[in-house]
Picture (spheres, rainbow, N blue to C red):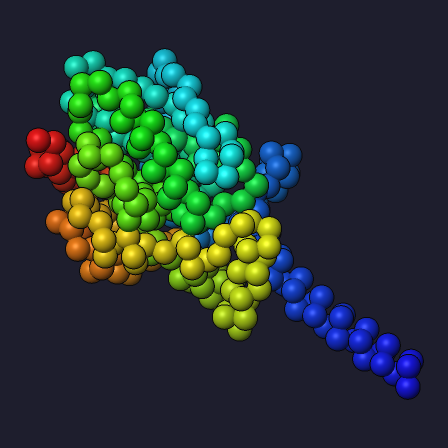
Length: 322
């Protein structure tokens, strides 16, 4: 009898371990930060969805020229501490006769110099002081886990107060995010922000971590039993990352935010599907505009229809600067 109980217990333990192991694999891929050594080692591996949705796919020349321009600028290093005591880094680039500040919030595993490569120079030449923030776990910022906005929203909030303290001329402040950075900006708008924050620009932002991982699991990896998978991922987020997936959701923020929002999305985006910006736009109770670029993929709207993209941003600034 005792041997039978031990065998049953062993079988249950083994089954549970296998059950959790698959959730751990997805968590490790999507949430846990890779070391620089592993990131370089696995650079050869790239999913088709990430490849075709990257600006390099069609606009490599413009993308690389933008990154080179960013690297050539004389920027100031800035640091703050997050609520969970991480040291976060940003690069600050002042403009001559500046008329506003723009805080640039990059996307998932990205960088400010990459995601905003094509737009940063345009903003700077149009009298914008720029703050390129390194999201936790990226660039020179500390962190072990990417939280899809659950904690990044509070990091963005802290950067707004950092800029507000430097804002001696009382210039308007805008939050501009792309992809996960856009989701973090939208979530941050649900919290208290300095009065000089006049508006938000959200390019290709998703509406929740759960919906985004669900789309990735189904469409990229063709996985079944997605709800069970996400349940396991959520357990690891809580146990190791100190957050839950439900905390990474724009819904509440869009209901309470009263600052104007300019949404952009590419109609052919298969990384963050356009339905996400349509949902955020629908839920938003503030003055809002949604600009969908028909032929653009993920983060490619500024490249695909440059004139319209830039015109909409300048109109947005002109409308709310005052």
